[in-house]
Length: 392
Ligand SMILES: *[C@@H]1O[C@H](CO)[C@@H](O)[C@H](O)[C@H]1NC(C)=O
Ligand SMILES: *[C@@H]1O[C@H](CO)[C@@H](O)[C@H](O)[C@H]1NC(C)=O
Ligand SMILES: *[C@@H]1O[C@H](CO)[C@@H](O)[C@H](O)[C@H]1NC(C)=O
Image 1 (cartoon, rainbow, N blue to C red):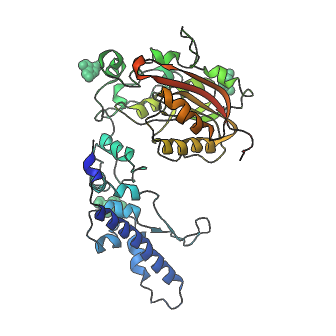
Image 2: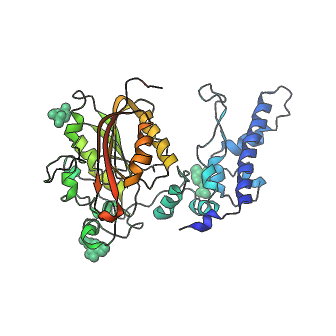
Image 3: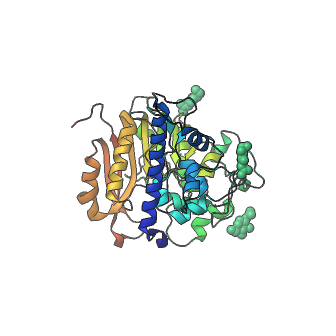
């Protein structure tokens, strides 16, 4: 789609990396001279330039790159006001983003062009594309994001869990639909395949997910209650739903006093706003991002539809290990309707998933027919448990 970005002159990128590197190197030189007794103390200029959050930066004035001023301000090492700390093992702090963003220099310039202390441009769709191709997390900006014109406070709990939020709670610029009734009617009006076409209709399919009350029980559809029964009552308390669409999994879990954070992008719909309006926590990270949880902490990780054969195998392998990492020993990974081509299941995905080291509690493979039988697609629903002790 945006192939122009891929063809950026490599020399430009290399130059940025050199700039970023020399920035760090300068800091190193200056900060070591701070501690040296024979220092001629040129460090004061450096400190003023880097330390002051709103001054123009010394690095910028020395170079004539395309890198936007705000990006340089954000990514330059900042000296800590109280000096060296053993917690960091450093006297400065570097923003943990940047390098991948410089591969998309034009987009980055556009993203970082705004009036400091003013309003941000209304650029959600553009920003999400930049994020999804690898500039994640996006750099911070010193501007105020667009807000809805006549924002209304959310409905109170518990009514908010199953209510369509007011249209005025969303900035609609990035989406084809401009109100919730359009999103709800999408499953009837919109042609073509879209995984989450009916997600916004809280009176439709969403109502019946994971509670097993819809007729035609399918082996692939585990219910929340049968999954929770696998563990001692009350020991599944906190967790994560990866690519959780409208947030219904988190809502169903909240009804059982379980706290779930839902990751979602806003792919042609205001998923994050919708999840938040319902009263559960949205987390705006893609599947590329290292999960922002510490090792061995979560009781459950669930994921439906998003983990599938569109993900490059190596990325998927890293991701599965990351899920293993954040789950506590005895924690559950509910891989819900993973899909791929028939022959890929045995050849690729079964060994790939098995290599991570989970214990299989349930493993159900079935045909996926919603796009027709000739695509020979398969579903896998699995309930996996992180063992109490690692093996190997
Ligand atoms: C933004 O606010 C800071 C803090 O008050 C100020 O120092 C800076 O000059 C302002 N920048 C612009 C461009 O208005
Ligand atoms: C919602 O948007 C559609 C077009 O996307 C429009 O036809 C309809 O009138 C709008 N409905 C409301 C309630 O604003
Ligand atoms: C959830 O917690 C509340 C308050 O502790 C309690 O009254 C309620 O019975 C719990 N609900 C479930 C389904 O456990």
